[in-house]
Image (tube, rainbow, N blue to C red; front, side, top):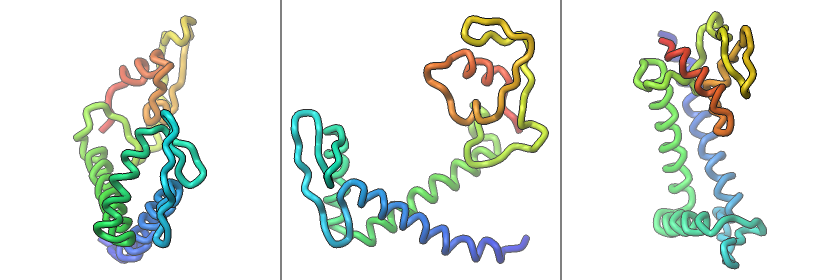
Length: 159
């Protein structure tokens, strides 16, 4: 196994995840230099000039407390590490068949499995002779479109 690519990728991925966490914290008014105040008005919380639901303010407060306790850089690195580990674990479970639903989000399927022909599938109350479901229907479930989700589930998980 050639580990050179992994050795080159890992440090850059770490920096990218830390930057993503830092950018997300800044979106909620938390930066290394300044913590924007939260103004709550009814069911809305205003942070950094943006309005959010009040529930977001409670989660932001917990993050703010952690930043006060551990420091901004350490908190961002810890969050980046946690998300990286979660994504690696999900990808591992996808590749090894530990997820019983069969959806793949972080790993690709073989090129031959990109489209699945489905016969006599009902969509929006209309009968179709043959329908092709791209694999992204399986990846991004449509909560308001149960016929497509049901049809994708009947295809079964892929190995």
